[in-house]
Image 1 (cartoon, rainbow, N blue to C red):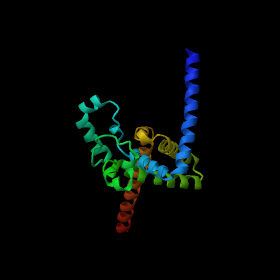
Image 2: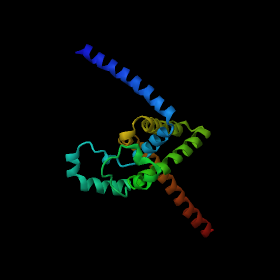
Image 3: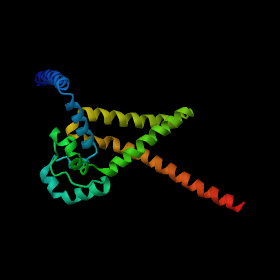
Image 4: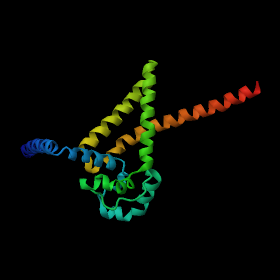
Length: 197
């Protein structure tokens, strides 16, 4: 039994080596393939992960709840009828159609939280605040590692891997909102105290 597994693993390594050399040959012959794959990966990354059609019968029963979740939690304008895997559907001519499938609230959270996390990390490092810098660096490195490695390696279903980093991005967003709330409270308080004096 173990010998059979080892042989199967060895076969996988051989196949992976051939796939890698074929992929490099394709990219050298047609570099546009790499650009199109990157665009496709980015679009799919921000599509709500419930749209991964793994269990069609179960999905059919839960479709109304799934759609409600996609709209309210992710900000998706149009449901993905069938998960498109053809890279041709991600050319510029199809971007409008693909953009409607993106979870816009998810994208907004990422766009707000990650730059804020980078800024807070930079300030913490600059001010020698190790207690704040260490967890922020951990959050950002994990987000970048999972995001980048997944965008490169997991195109067809990479939105599922967001489950690992969404909580980290939400933690950064919570820190951003808390900081904004502090600043908002401090300003009115300063204005009231200056009006009293």
